[in-house]
Length: 429
Image 1: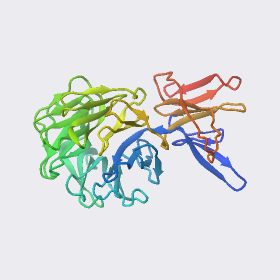
Image 2: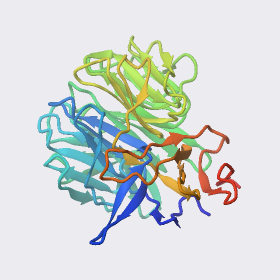
Image 3: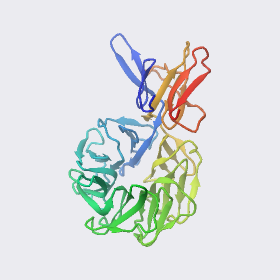
Image 4: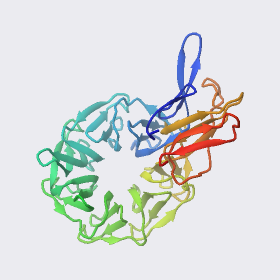
């Protein structure tokens, strides 16, 4: 069975979460029962109200969730588009305006996510998005623009001057086979924009970083000695000469506007970098079962792993705008939160039903157990799957101990003659 297939087992439908069907004489309804969590893509915080957070799942189609208590409880926002979302942002001056994008589509809400409009790029695609640092009408994006004549992609800078209603796509010269995956804007001079990504030559992926000082009219290659694929960039707001690039090869730092780069001591694997809004010298990088923190602008780093042993890769990291001790993380295995500046982390997935369930199995007997295979997390179990949705009792899930290196199960079966014997099948055979 293919790992992405869905199947019906014991009257339960597999989707982003296990659903329970409850029957009455009048109607039937479906209620999500978990397991909570799932692969988280990107995070955003309301500037005017730090309690309000938004996140998008890293699945296809993506889901969007909102929290009004700093991630303690999540509720899904009605987002009825089939898209793999790669970014979410909140307008700094008009927080009811939310922006998100997924490959060829840009989406906008003017009422905190209740309704959405979309703009389609016929020959381009979004990989990252950030608001302008000065003008709230301007949005900066990056991705690629397709050359239909040559049949190749090119690194592209995407810009809107009317809050996403229209977009211009600027190809970065000499980037055939290129994809821009990160865009960063200098906070005090939004005409200075940085793009990071890579160019695929057919045999290897070559790191690329470009800089414009005139709003995108001209671009300078400042890649230098960078290596790997550039995942993210950080530009210091108080010292425009300091740039940090997170790549698949390491984390690199430049203190001379990209003229030269130095790898950070040791190997750090990460996807996203963020800075503390109250102190730009404090930086965080979300890694694989780890979070890296620097308090000196990226010169030195401390590795934190407490509470992250099963977190896997971080797709986003966000520092609370009003309390520097609070840090949020969107990981492949769910939403995690730190209240001590990144030293330790705890899951905070209540109401977050973004788990990608690949298989389920219900054991026999008067008190059956329900097993759920979850993509990237292996196997979960609940002993009370029939808890009613209208009762106070909740369905409680326990993650079973890891038993294989592969975390993706295609099927699970309980031996009919002995419910203590479980058979699990992985995708690799």
